[in-house]
Image (cartoon, rainbow, N blue to C red; front, side, top):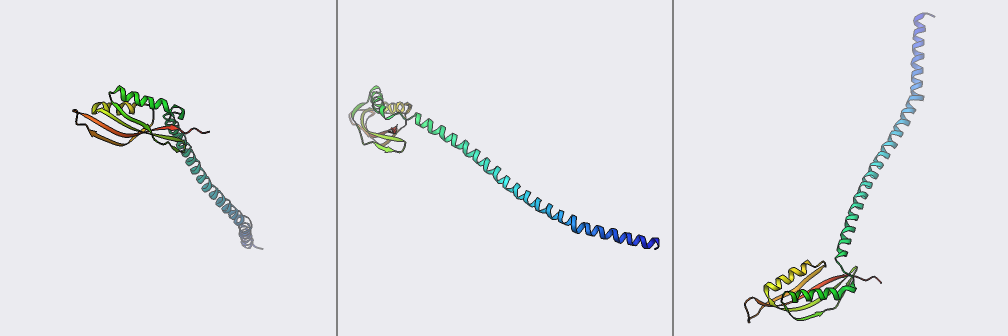
Length: 178
């Protein structure tokens, strides 16, 4: 055997070993690597979704705490139902302090809602418009949630700036859970 022939056989043998190595070792390893990479990519996508969901959950928790603070604030403005008489007394004292003459003050039917009770009062007051305006400002300063509705003002003929006010003021209270 000549040296060129040996070189050719060695080259063919070397090429065959390389081809067999590629077919039976490298190709399956590449296939396994591609599958593993696909699994990792899928898990990375899921991880990104989980991180996004966790971030959204944190935002919801922050919003929930803000809502809870708002509920506590408004509940602090709602006296217990047992204090209805005190609030009624405050309203009448303010009206008298401002120089208004109460013609009638009567309670209307309570409206029970979930979490609070609305107690409407039908009031008829007479007096000076400036005094009535001061009365409304004083009502607004009370640490209670109130609402004035069905307000009717009529000018009185017997004096300058004299009015008759007919309105309903609703006072809100905590619903007593029993």
